[in-house]
Image 1 (tube, rainbow, N blue to C red):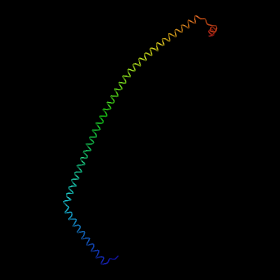
Image 2: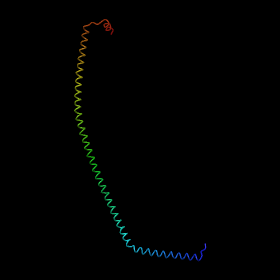
Image 3: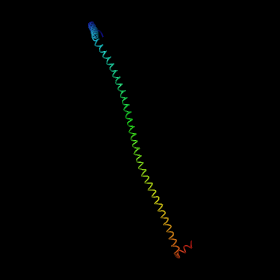
Image 4: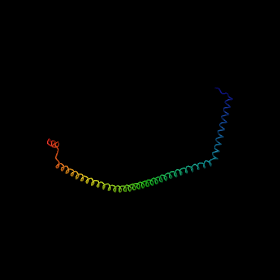
Length: 161
């Protein structure tokens, strides 16, 4: 590709303008920076203060978390002690009611034992009456046997034995 003289001159002019624009813009930027140095210093100071405030806030938040955890632990301990106390009361109530039931059962057991003893005594009397009654029956049978004569069939049955 070939470039004409005219094209070359135009490219050089454009590059020169760009260079001047760059130099002007750099000078403008420097002036702008010099003018804004105070603003930048204030901005830096504000950033430092913000960083310090953030650190303080983080420290306060950490302290709050510690305080909260301490409060939680205290609350947990309080709740645990209340629960233990209630369990003890429930246990004592349960024990006292159980003792009352046992006392009532003891009375019932004594009554039951007394009834059993009466039943045993009644059984003995009944056995004694039955024995007496049986002996009375035996005596009657013997008396009847002695006073009656056996029939022929009975006599012959006795002989066979």
